[in-house]
Image (cartoon, rainbow over all chains, first blue to last red; front, side, top):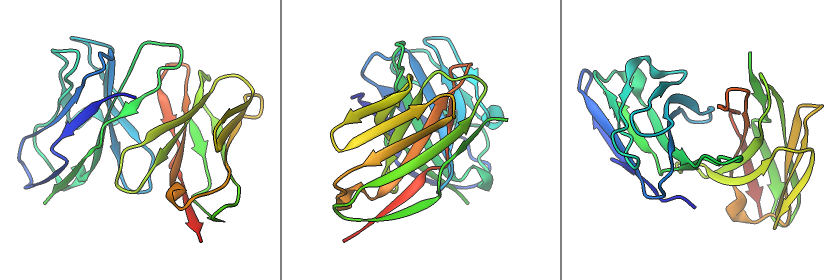
Length: 113
Length: 109
């Protein structure tokens, strides 16, 4: 069971603001992921990382950026928040194994007014 | 394109058995996962299948047929706490997880 943390848990912010969603894991997992999930819908991969200084884009990455300076930390930044960004953001991590099970943080619920 | 199909919602009675089906069409196959997600919470890992057959883990079992692109999750002795969404996800040839929209399971007393 991975220990993975996200802050803030809830965020209400105005259009145009810059925001950073934090994600940290204490399991030493190399791979980390950011997903976006709307209620009743599938998870969409935004960004992922294979390790320090590695970042890759997923399906919905064009309006956000990530960094991976330390193994345990994988923050997601929205440069200019819009109402269309209102969603739940889930961070996950996994080890490099045959199974590579992804373990999720509690999520950040974002509301952009 | 890649596609994961699951029923949107199912209802079952406490103490009964329920089977949640998942069919998939993906570019390659490198394993299938089932996750449980309670409302407003993050997904938690339930099971993993990469070879054909049944994997049993307590009250939960998961079955895979790669030739049919089909899996099911079987929940026995249902409890009220099993009310949740159950997500099927397939790892494709690029080692990315393709997610279904989930099946909302409602347990009635």
